[in-house]
Length: 322
Image (tube, rainbow, N blue to C red; front, side, top):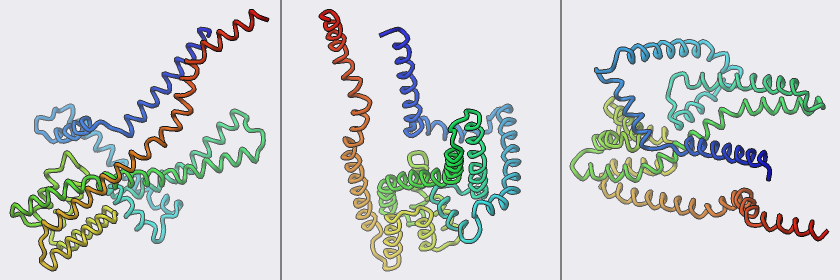
């Protein structure tokens, strides 16, 4: 093998390794780093916060205010172009609630990104294809431009769907531990309303998503909403069938006067069993998922290392014999 081939192989290996590390750091974040980030955000409310940091924070707040005004101005126009009329915003608001995006400009950002991507991606694709003069067939070129427009139109929907799935899975994994804490608080003498608020505070750093949902439920209860209404709103915000069953069980226990702690114990065991079954199912799928990287990545390299010297030796012997 020549030096150019070795350098090329090393560069390809470094590129693959860098992309793999980037994907892992994106989809498998470090929990310790996330906690440090949340603590840093909390420290910005400290009175010992420096003047330079305060000036930077105020500049960022002014930029956010300007961006908010621009989004509010562009919102109706982009919503009309993106099909945001009729009953669509209500279902979108429900999906944004499932994703945890409760900003008043979330719909505007969604429609603006949908419109801009639908317009900009085909323009960019057309410019690149014209600059490269490929393909020569105009129909194929137009098909690629239309495909770029479709990708730009559906890309925000895909991002929103992935965000909803990720958040719902995190909530589903966090609920068994939260129910155990809720049962302990109820058995210790706290009412269900106070227990929900206390569990939300205790799980602020370990399970921030569930803590946010419990905090909203506690605020609704303190604002005067009935317990059944607050729990139904919690179920609607989460959007999971298991949590719907939990809310129905708590409402029935409150209505008929049955023991809430026993109901929480039984349902926490059921959720924990489901979580263990999901983990076992994921572990059972792992060998099948590893089959393709083994076939296309590991086995060719292994065969090259094992059979490469043999092939080189045989080629030299055949040359000598010839």
